[in-house]
Image (cartoon, rainbow, N blue to C red; front, side):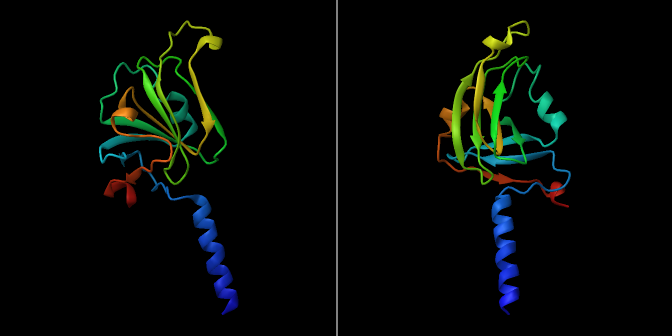
Length: 157
């Protein structure tokens, strides 16, 4: 009996460490609920290739859209807006979707701008959410806030 309890405790710790966010296989998008109840459809950047491309070269991001970058480690992340044609808010989250830090309106950069002058947003995080500029303030996304996620039924299969 004691051995079963130890195994159960180890499994609970393992799942707790993995965090509340579990991506279904093949998931490409999800719906995030912001602190004021507003729903945002987010593309999931799960692979290095998707993370590298991100929102580059897009000229517009509708108010109810965003991109959620998902990383396997919670270490420091540095984002810069080179080749992004829109201004964005950056929200750094832990694996449980709790907001660690918010950068309001990280300005875009010109493609010919030197790296030393490119706007950067940096903090430790497991997840980084990119929203249209102004969305974080408009929907009360601030440090300590908790977001909720919903995966479409097709992604859960």
